[in-house]
Image 1 (spheres, rainbow, N blue to C red):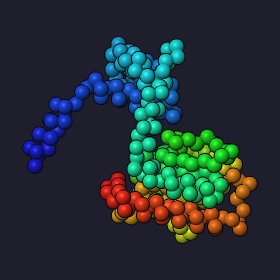
Image 2: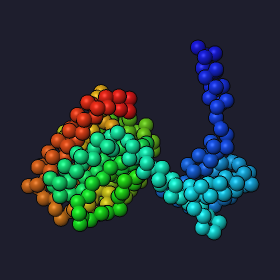
Image 3: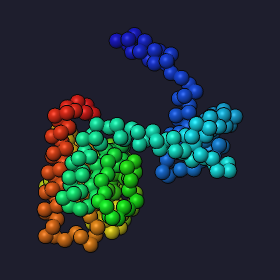
Image 4: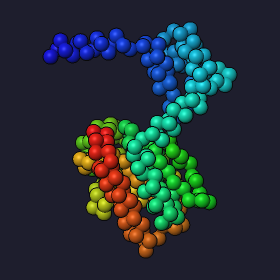
Length: 268
């Protein structure tokens, strides 16, 4: 067994392209928290000579993967194109589009689909009615899972131990008065969500925008996505909430059914 693992590791190393690996590591140094980096910062981050990093930066800039302003760099449009190409080819995003469109048409509000990536949610599909307020969220947007209603839909089945494994420390970053301060507060919200079958929040992340979200499940019952509708704060009234929540749940169940039928091995 050990000999087999060692052989496999050696084969992987043999086929790895070090220069490409370093270039990808360099791109991964950029994040929403640090969207702009200088060459010296990147050299320290990668623990590589500045001359090597400068050549990498020049190559990536010439290819459109980085943009330079003076001595600082940020991700370029080529990275954005790759991201959109990835999202547009995802089977779940393709299956979701008519479901989201139907929900949008029925309610006249924006509908969204997101996946979880670590402690974040990534929006992979979005349908907005004509003339509606767009907000700051777009396809490809990445938001904190603990501070968004869609994130709670994606965390729907998790217990406290699983949440601690994902989020680590005691304190969670705050984005509004509604953001849970720690895993215990987040867990209480998830218990409420499970009891009613959906997640809801008023201005939970973005002031003036409320959401209702429900989990989308794979063939084996695991939560693989979150489906939501965004509601202007002025439209959120008790007599409409239950009807809207039911329609969001039905849309999530419809998408789950499509996923089971057409892509039973999705994300296994």
